[in-house]
Length: 173
Image (cartoon, helix red, strand yellow):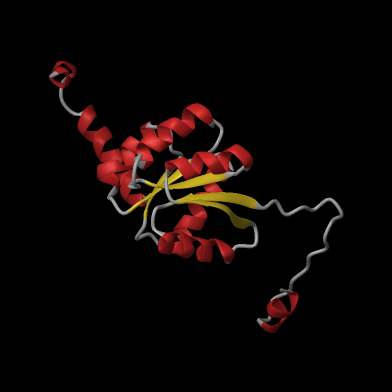
C-alpha cells in the first residue's frame, strides 16, 4: 500500500500499534441461487475486513448453520423455496434476536422494503444495486445502523408527506 501511495505521489504513513486488530465481519448468505451466492462472495472477497463464512439455500439450512456458527450479519433473499425471506426473518428475530439482517431482493422497495424493515430487517437492498452499495450496507448495519437505499428513503418520505396532509379526522377512514 505504501508503495502504491508513493507511486501516486501521495505520502503514506501507518505505524501499526501492537493492539491494532482487524475485526473480520463474518457473513451468512441465504439465497436459493448458487450463482447469486457466488457473486456475493466475490464482492465480499474484495474487502479485507469481510468474509462469507456460511451459505444456505433455504431456511432449514440457515437454522442448521446457525446452530454451530456465529455471524455478524445475515444477508437473506426475500424469495426462497419453502419459507420466504420475510417469514425466515420473523423466525430469526425470535430465535436469534441480536443477529442483524439485510434483505437482498429482486423486488422493488415499494413492494417489500417497508415490510422487511417492519419485520425486523436492518436494511433492504435490491439485487440490481451496485456492489459498493452492498459493502456500504453491510458496514452500516454491522456498526449498529440501518441501511435503506435512496429510493426507499424517498418512498418513506412520500408516505410521511401523504400522512401529514389533510385533517386528522380524514385519516380515520
